[in-house]
Length: 322
Image (cartoon, rainbow, N blue to C red):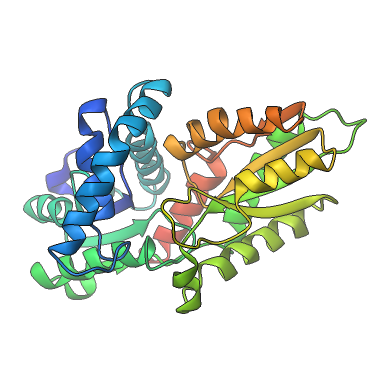
């Protein structure tokens, strides 16, 4: 498609990842140097980010190696954008989709500059975080507002808000769990463990709505798919500060100790596969589950190219095209 003839662009924004092992250090430094994640002033923040990166890079490189040498997040983000623009192109000819990332290139301002060089008149930004947290959605909003000011975009830039309770988001989430249910022994009981990315507890105490929104998503899923035995946990804790509880690892150990032998782990808020699903859940958590005596461990898929999720993205974008 010739971008120079396009007047409207969809800008999908995700966190990014290391496309190969040589890019792990830079990605991690950019992540920890984000003021929305670490509030320390510069140059202290950069120094601490450098220290964390130096300590963790060898381990994270090994994790990337074990999932194939790089993150598939960028591949899935491009596919999601391409499918969204394709779905809308019948009614809105010439609409295009591009990607931007918080911690790798192209960053938001770089992507915006490229679009404006191609004479795009309207940009609809879609942060790929269903729930709002200052550390994720809030960070992207800061990038977008900085770009709005730099390029004098005014109302030419539209931003899709969190969609954690959108009916299509709930429908897509239910579909993922239903796929996992086919792998359960229906003659035996099972437990459904929702796992969402954790945050330092200090964020929640300051009023971050993330946990409440995650809990709302879970409640809406269970309304559509009533399951007797379930719980919610939080993963990806880093560092010594207090994080949201219960942790996914401790939940798995506790469930195994109670005699649970079948479990479905379903990620909440992850829109595509990346290191936290492919390694943290599929490799690390699976081993912990087996050590805890859980015989059947099934990780529900995330959206990736799920048609209902693409329909959700298209629906959110179309609100700004009518």
